[in-house]
Length: 555
Image 1 (cartoon, helix red, strand yellow):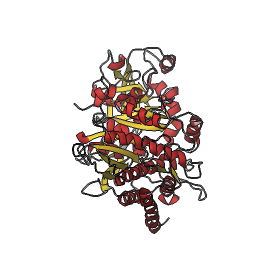
Image 2 (cartoon, helix red, strand yellow; image 1 turned 45 degrees about the horizontal axis):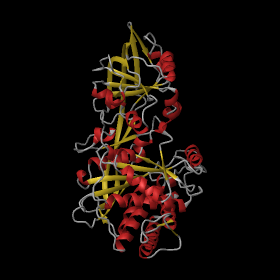
Image 3 (cartoon, helix red, strand yellow; image 1 turned 135 degrees about the vertical axis):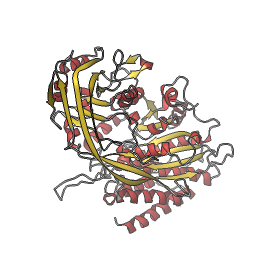
Image 4 (cartoon, one colour; image 1 turned 30 degrees about the vertical axis):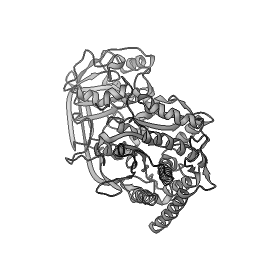
């Protein structure tokens, strides 16, 4: 669609929304078990309209920093304004501009070699190794001794210290990309994303990731190499530097199986032996690798701007109105694929990931405004935050968490919406993060009120807890929850089919068999959760002795 079509379409959808605020339509989906006869009802029709517009080919996949994303951001801001929200961005606007740093590794500059007994062995780039892009060093190289540390974890809560008995200060850490089995799902996800930070804190200057069968299943070497020339992203801090949580690591990289076999030649265990030990669950101690390793890489940079969009409904209770419940959903997707075939569909429309999440968030905003119009405003203020660059590493939410537009201490909770696969009538949900705080009971009450079961994480190997925007709020000490549709009533088959056929592909469009009634049911459930948080006498609290509360919680 042309930009003029955007304006007319947004106006049409907003007009429908205002009509629904005033009265319920026949298309509205009634809650399964409403706790109040006056509770507003979510609309399948509204969800369908939002999803269709946001995932239309004209948006070209809504990649952060592109005109398609900018149009989507303006659409969301227009919807918020028409619904009667107030701007909650920067300087009284709907937007918080996020400075993104696009980082591209120089494939011709990467090098890695091993020196042992006076002999230097050069490894083959792209076949043996790949050097990581660096957010804070345009060019860097390091020569140092290397230490193998198993999984590379220090987790005293679980009696794990893979660095015991070795000193990695000034050295290169070599570790499996996988994590050990047996850890709780969400704690395991946290540690999976924290390995380089652990090594840096202990003084490492470089980091090498090794592949195992479980790691290869998630991140195949051939796909890693195929994407090696694509840019990575971070955000730019107030000093103008690319943000990284491991500034002390000079160079990082990954080895293929054959590269790892070369690295472990002459070591006290061969690579085949440590892989066999890892796969059988055997324990092994860290050990130094013979010789030294030289790693070098270079990166180029480009800064682009891409906005978060924020609106707020002000709380009505004078004692609680300056506290905020933040509802998040990422607006971006992965853009367009490259192809030499002019007839090939190259647009990754992102209908389920995450036009649906944005649509649910907008529908929740409408439900709050309808309740307000019926004389039932929320006690706390509620911020609706559409974030950019989730697909680049949760960057929009991380930027907001570091630079919130309201005081961080006044944010009492985050409720996140990401990729609800609304292709079936769900009967259960997964609530990532719920069991770490009092939000767990809030979610259980809301789910129970709709005859929806709350189930444990059935896919812990995917580390989903750290792969969506709520995690950036957890890292700032904010109790957070992220609902995902469960595996009952055919849900597992729907999930696995979507992931294998349409996830991050052009097939994620509205030609899929989307169940908009299920989407409305999901919106109602999330509204009940957010509503209870907004109206509760007390703000949510971390559970006593909780892993994330102890690690990130605010005093």
